[in-house]
Length: 279
Image (cartoon, rainbow, N blue to C red):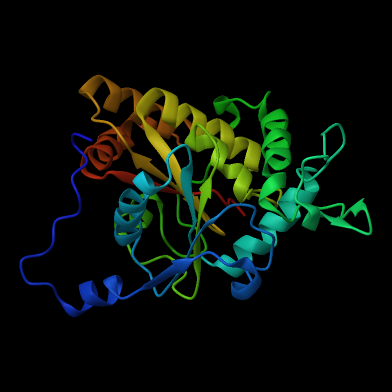
């Protein structure tokens, strides 16, 4: 796409650059890789990747291989993210099978002729997605509120977007999610569980707004961070509008004071990270 050229290599790559590039990628096999919770989509298992920049480039590279699907990655601290995703899924009853036709499911979804009571196969993803869509139907972007200052990691909004090596290098999962819109991919790894955090419905509303208005598509979520990737060139009018939307989520005494910094970040970077945990 225009305006979305691949990351340019430094003239003389340094050791940190090569370390960021030194990762392994293989087809996703949940049974062997033990992701702690059931992942319901095909995809990739990645080890040794710390750089968000490298992940963004990897997602752009792999996306054409998955027509009709959206790539969605786990980000920071996979163990904690999987823990909260499991609890968030249960809390919001996203695995509830009531009202769904189960006759076409993979036989592995059943035990002794009865459905297991939770989702374990690709054939059941439509249930999770349907429940997520229903639970988020009434959530609006105006309900989304985030912390602007430093999180537990000591990074504020600008620090987070200036720090590239924040991913969980031990394991990172990329799911190819069979949905039309990127905001719907949160169904594959719902997150947001603690009371001070954004809930998956909030992230759905936030991601829908960003994608439909500005072409910023949801590409991943971790234990604390959620990421959006720019897929179109923004006019100055759209930069101004997006800046206002970003600032509206933060509890700031004088948001206009921060507007030039946010706008400059939007112009410079093809992705944005937000800390969705406020506790």
